[in-house]
Amino acid sequence: AGTLSAAAAELGAAGGTDWLPPVLPASRAEAVIVEVAREHLYSATAADDPAVARAEAILACVPPSSTQGDIGADGGLSLEGGRQHSATQPIDGSGGGKGGEGDNTNFHTIMAVRDTIAVVRMLPGFGVVLAPAQLRQTADRFEVIHQCLAAGPAAYLRADDLRTLAARLGLGSSAQQHAVSAACARAALAAGDGAAAAAAALRLAAA
View 1 (cartoon, one colour):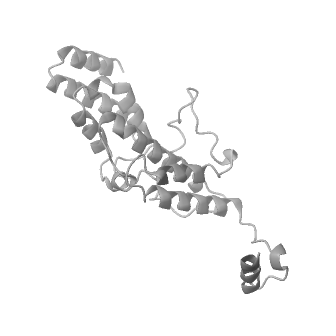
View 2 (cartoon, rainbow, N blue to C red):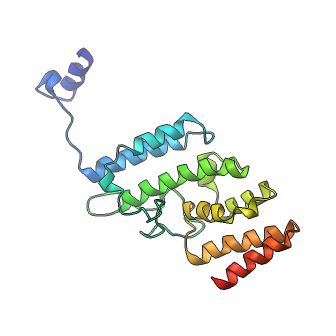
View 3 (cartoon, helix red, strand yellow):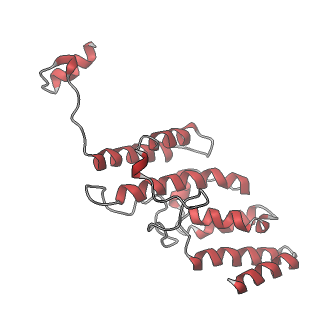
């Protein structure tokens, strides 16, 4: 209580321990939450670093109404809503402007940070380990897909998982998803699995 009173007095508040900080506008509060979550996330050294879970918990402080509307019918994140972007745009949405009243910058940044967390957790399943900061610094995110295919001799058989991973990386357009399928077909051919390569080629031809 003494510390709180001293802080209140320092701030010039008249109510002593009754003093409360001013209420921030919702958009500004969300921007602060996102920034703190990103600081924790990019301090993590691996997917199982407690800082990743802390970042996720901090993002959970954002009201559900602020992140609704981006969930697809299958329970996964929709590829709609403007989160598709070029393979070299920062995955965490940090390339945009400052969040503020009347815009949806916070919304897209929140979803992008959640995607980053999901990607970091998915990668070890493919035999790839990247810290969040390393993922952020990857200039071409399609390179992450190539790393997954190179790390596991049968990773090309997990085309659906790789397409989901690509979508989380922001590579969700039809052309980008087809590029993932084509990469899987080439990996299958390189592994001598002609049947898998042919099946992938037929699916691409029918798309």
